[in-house]
Length: 338
Image (cartoon, rainbow, N blue to C red):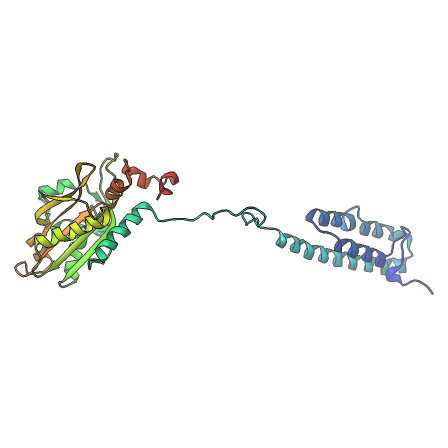
């Protein structure tokens, strides 16, 4: 009985069916990408076995040539499909770059952390939260009205010279600026709420000034405000004394001295005893009656106190940091110490 045309051997001695069996058997035994590539070259390459079979078709008569040629081309498509499928499987089984090698010894994973300024802000606000203060935030791009005017700092007030203001170009307003302190939130909070008020306001501030070891053109502040009937200077001292004990230790000594801020009267600065010296850590005072009245409060009925501090400066004391610029340099050697 004559041989089936689909498996008829060429003069090269190999039939389509024999080549198919050999190719699939060889493919099943490949274990690596290199072996898979060698298989492709050996069977489907320009000098591969399937190409050799096709070149031997010229020895067949025209009828057998058509049948064997069609079977060989069909086999090529089948082998190419098998190759693509195996290639995808090989790539998916390879470990991606940066994956964990389970054969290596255990290593502590790299973890991120909070910025030291953020850590200190959270510690400060937590201390006041536990004393009944609410944490709120406000805009960094502010209006002159809230940054100065409502805080008893009108345009001709000499105290404006204390703030080197960064003004913002605007097509619709000529009074837009980057806030120079967090105190505008005193005016905004009182304008929007009736007493009693007890808030702390953390946030970024900006001033157009030279930088050095103790000054930056951008920095954080934490503002505090309490307004109610019957609030006295004793409440201010007691609150800030408790804050100092929570941040610097229960035995920390504090000192209050007179100071001037246009939005409080009287004004004070508070210092702590640190390594035998007195170091100022914040400014404070009783809310000026004009500030209360600008917000629509009756200054004969309500009183309050306010305070402001720089968390970077407090962190510098606690962690013996000598240059405030470290907080904004993005140097991981510094940041990872906290």
